[in-house]
Length: 349
Image (tube, rainbow, N blue to C red; front, side):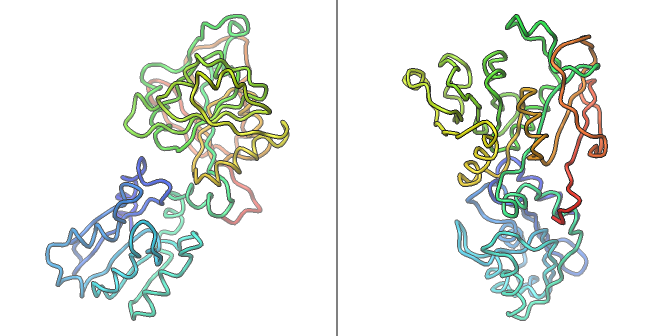
């Protein structure tokens, strides 16, 4: 099962909105086949693992390990449970049940009804972790929300200079910024507020890392952002959320518009829209007000905070997360990265 999880992670930048799945086939204590789901619409892990076995006659005396329950429905590809039955594999070990309503135990039942021995719940916690975005999407009916920001050594996101100047002083260095682009590549959408889009003029693409550009989401309540900003270029799709659209901007910029009703419900309306569009993961990069709103409304699941090596003395305060949510930390590019995980004591997910 550990090998299944290793393989599954190979799909981190292409499998979404499908889950991360790895499969291993073992015969007489030896691995004879492996596979993972690399790209949405392509073959699933079980299919690739079975196809990789050179001597197919060994399948009738083998065990298939998979971190997520094999599918039992026809989607973009035929059901994996049906293929497993057809190959004659006698035993299947499953890490966790698939929470997707089209599966949710149906694959396991199909296998057992065919006389296949099925064991479940192996390394279930680890299996749930690597597919936390997929699980959150299907159980909470919203995207998995990751917060990300950089702050100075003394806790500021930006110095006072930004109040009166557009000359940004960056906290991230040439090395640590690569990590931010890697994070973008593993999310389907990225969100910033109006001020960040205007002052920083970010492109919000994955130009420093391999992977698809996420959908760019910007909150612009009063339609103040101008068409020349990078967020309106054609390098990636853009969604503007606001009270009304700036139609003259629309003549020169390419984007979709999401009307929101008021400030208090804006974040939930955006998450609802993304959910219905099939967006499973959202990376929130700022600014401070937007990040604080996600924290205050408890609409977040994970956070990465880069702590730079310089101090500003004063400026825009960085958001604050309770230390009880700190899961771990590491160093990259000479900067410390704090990793937080939100947990709700009433949530058994």
